[in-house]
View 1 (cartoon, one colour):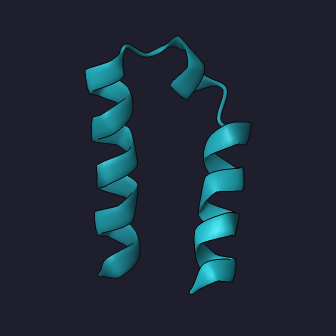
View 2 (cartoon, rainbow, N blue to C red; view 1 turned 45 degrees about the vertical axis):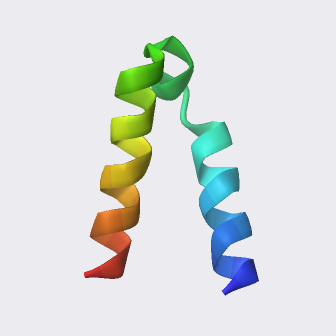
Length: 39
């Protein structure tokens, strides 16, 4: 699980679009990715 979490965080850091979003949109993007991964 720790490896999966680290990989997820690394993917987020590489995502250029997240750096341009406001806080609410960034949180939404992160939550949606977590929900997609858990399905």
